[in-house]
Image (cartoon, rainbow, N blue to C red; front, side, top):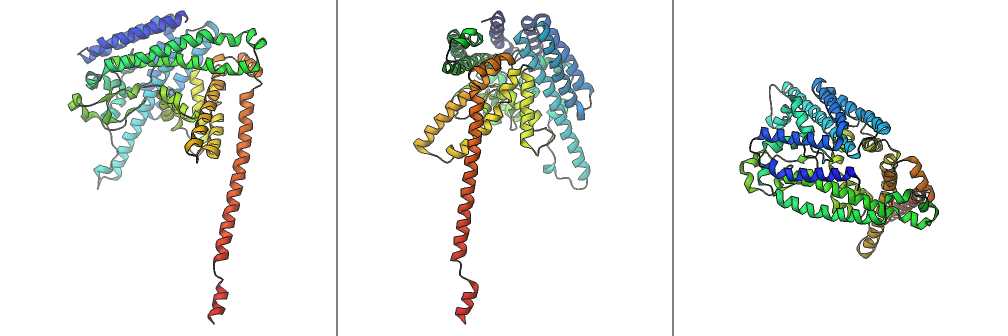
Length: 492
């Protein structure tokens, strides 16, 4: 582990420990100030002078949220925050910036632009409500009116101080998880944190974090990524060895990510952050999907969960059969942000491929400007389309032992695809990626292209057979139908 990784882990553990103290602060205003102060301290410790980027981008983003009219504020803030990433990464390219500072900046970008999107959405609801009232002045049906909450109105009077508190809250400031401003506000206004099983949830997650960390250290010792860049790897190792090497390196990467994300979730759970009653139906990143404000009256009588701040469903990622399912369980809080603010708001809803492409491109841009990010993320839909096609051809209608065998094959292919594409993400530069893929003769992309071609051929053959069968059925039905003229003659 590098010195940056050591500092990062120490900061995360310190934040976990601080949660027990922060949760017990009675005065909400004091708790908010302490949380922000801790966040700023963590940012400065991890980033040093580079933390100035965080302060500068926050100032620009906050100005956009507050000064631009809500009808355009979300677009301007999005351009400002994502545009600042260009300057930030150009600075990194020439002078170098710690990797964990990049993560801080990435989360900050989602938070500030997310507030702007929420403010605009709330403003549109308020405008629609006013229009509805004007159109129905004579006969207003209260049940048909668009529902407006206190939160919608509060967003229109948001202050710079609140945005700063939200952005630099020590909970999630390092590597997330991403959470809405509403989740942040509820932490200080709702009593749920007091009754949630914070310590128990934290200890349970810490067990998994230790397990993931042990896996990471072990696999990284035997199969380090650096070895895949060495001349010995390319000159002395066989084609099969080089191809199979993607499995342990991507496994190591997953174990590292799982460790960091689980520790980040521990920061939340120890402070009671993101805890909601089961009745509120909370969703990852989004928070409650049902009314929940009334639940605070008997807060001690509910069962709580921390679903809102769970960023990756590890067991589901590992056990699910298909690539598509694995993507749905990976980094789900960020996926929520992308789905709500990019996919659903994409100007043209007619073409699903365009919306999906724009969303994945935004995700790749957010991750970084290195070629590996685009090789990996933009390659995902290529494999998913292949997988969907073969799912319809050989898996969808099967059952029993045959289905289980096919499921296992899909699972193996899923992890090969993740590992093969993930290798590009890890190798990062175009030179390293091309050298590795050339050493295995680009077998991943070539085999996938062949499978798509074969799948298209088999699909067309199946459709032709179905059309032929339908024509024969129609012809047989027409033959069985008595002839009208013959019936008349027989009657005469």
